[in-house]
View 1 (cartoon, helix red, strand yellow):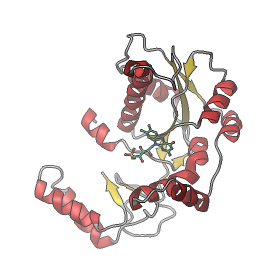
View 2: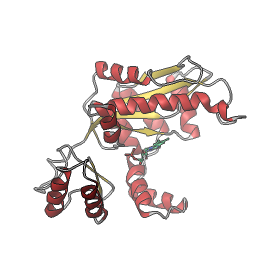
View 3: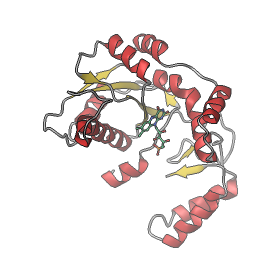
View 4: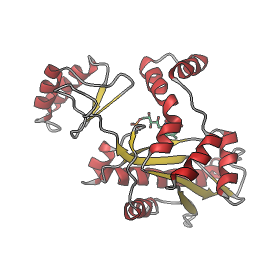
Length: 251
Ligand SMILES: Cc1cc2nc3c(=O)[nH]c(=O)nc-3n(C[C@H](O)[C@H](O)[C@H](O)COP(=O)(O)O)c2cc1C
């Protein structure tokens, strides 16, 4: 798979098959991360790979609050979120914050050297270490996609970040930008009786209401994908079909 394909395939998932990701694969992904540019040439990045599920549970129980769908709806209401698609994404995502980190085949906690107060930047370049770290994280995500592995980055709240640093023994002068959960998409072909379900194939359906698309839509999408990506008229038609659906299909 070339890099353009891997970038196009990269997507956020929050429903993980709990199968562990092998150490050799994790090593390849981290190596890809280390190919990212860094502001000071030092690549001051370290990674805690938390595979042990009992340790992971202990950490998450102290840091990530579980919330249900009703609570998630109240949160997006309180935020004043009005865009329907965005609301749907958050209401789907918020209740999965604990389970996605717990179930993922691999949980990586990146740490980077931050020499000044991260949350009190004086000039734009005060954020260079943070920016470099995120270049590295994106490399990891794209490399993972090329291996058929997907994930989600989660930004800890401030109190969570401090607890996490203490729990993991992260030394003074290092910061945690996010947690990275990586793994295989939890295909649901066994749960879904729909003849035309796209899951389990090379297609992903996402969105809170994502389940199956009606068969005629699948047929027309398949037909159009035969021309994909060369023909812009077909692409437009594909967009029109999908725009009428409550879900988006990522190919
Ligand atoms: C900086 C950053 C912070 C994010 N924080 C969270 C998060 O706390 N929880 C979560 O579930 N997803 C988080 N995400 C994932 C986004 O929700 C996701 O990238 C977005 O929905 C777009 O979906 P896509 O990655 O499939 O294109 C974050 C992504 C980025 C880049």
